[in-house]
Amino acid sequence: MPEGLPDRPRLIYRHRLITRLWHWINAIALLIMVGSGLMIFNAHPRLYWGQYGANFDHAWLELPRFPGWVTIPSYYSLAGARHWHFFFALVLAFGLLVYLLWSLANGHILRDLRIRVRELAPGHLWKDFKDHLALRFHDPRDPRAYNIFQKLAYVGTLFVLLPAVIFSGLALSPGMDAAWPWLTAMFGGRQSARSVHFIAMGAILVFLLVHLTLVLLAGPINELRAMITGWWRVPAEKQP
Image (cartoon, rainbow, N blue to C red; front, side, top):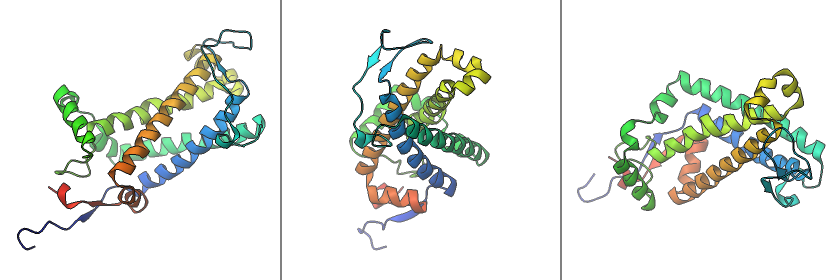
């Protein structure tokens, strides 16, 4: 390479097949579960804490019914929404289980998502925050590495939000409540489980919106290529 000319971008293999498959299956499952969940919520758009909740009880949150363009199905059908919701809940739960077991086996979680104490130091957090403001999302010394905000977001979603939405959903099932009453009791009652389910879903939606925003800012073509083929183009200025 002649002196003075920038290095040509290079490709690195960033996402394994299991990660890419889980990503897209999860995206479809969450999209359908949110839409069908909003239709289920429309049947009684009020949330309570405790075991019971009805029209004349005090609700900690009451929302207007969601319009048909964001629900599945688009017309009012509680039975139809439940069919969609329960089927893709199985897809989400078993997909998460397979992904976590595979990621533990191949070392992905310990290697890429392990949070080190030094990364939580105020100086380190402030530096990463400034890098994000400057749209520098990757470490030029190791473009495959996740920054601390990515780690916190992924760990929180994988090990807190997704399990919370899955187990609170199980606690809402009358069959599960009869077989495992301790699960419902763990949430403080079926209405509390419903509230936790809604809050966890809202937090996952916030994560998805932030995730999509950062993908757009980081370069959507490059990021989509990486999540489809596994190969990510490292810009010349980000190479070590």
